[in-house]
Amino acid sequence: MQKRTFTDQIQREVEISFPPKRIISIVPSQTELLFSLDLDIEIIGITKFCVHPAEKFKMVTKVGGTKKLNLDKIRELKPDLIIANKEENNQEEIEILMKEFPVWMSDIYTLNDALKMILQVGAISDKVNESENLVSKIKRKFENINLSGNSFQKVAYFIWKDPYMIAGKHTFIDDIIKICGFSNAFDLERYPEISLEVLKETNPDLIFLSSEPYPFKERHVEEFQKICPQSKVVIVDGEMFSWYGSRLLKAAAYLQVLVNEVNTDFAKIKSK
Image (cartoon, rainbow, N blue to C red; front, side):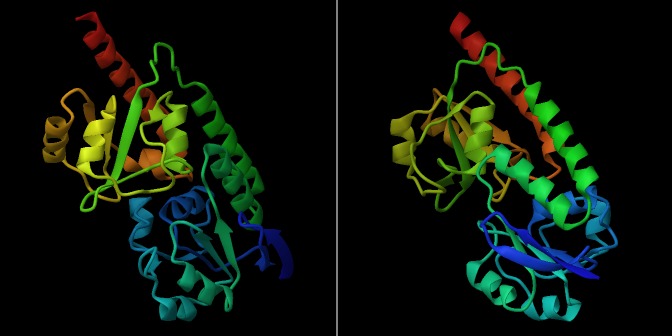
């Protein structure tokens, strides 16, 4: 098996045995991507959060969580490639693994970053044609999102409760919000904590409560509606806003439905 060197998304050169035969993925959206590229046999380890596809999840060895890995289990599996992410994984654990195994890192803030990642993962796993076809399909779906009639509502996108945390600027979620024709209600970086008092003062047009990582429910909609009675509060599928692998194939259609529903509701309000 030959050795080849690839550059990852944090500009590290990673030498791997090519093509890799024992892959561990420690990022849920990238795990789903690998299965989409027909790498079922090569995938030997995933995290407990790599739940898609469900039928494959049950069959693969779990190596802990995205931020709390079982390093000894990873060592037992002897991977020839680990695929990780700068934001989703623990830096200290990743640095330990880098000393022992080839670790390829993604670093994603935009849809374009995600598409580049898909192509790069295709290259390092010897699935170039499959990754190119996947990217072409995703591009077509996102190009067909219709934003006509969108009034560029301001969105507060909540990812956590106790403390309350939002998706701010310079995040993948923020880029998806923009693609939907909305704008972020907060000019803050990354994932800041905010108080409900600040939320009330900001008075966003839309409040999106994500289904993950915190599982917001209908009871939370009522709570937020009391705080911001003028806002439209919606529970949204967090996977469609934050998974940057092959789930993007489904995201465009979901986002189109969401945009249509929001625009219809705002049109009704204006007509009153």
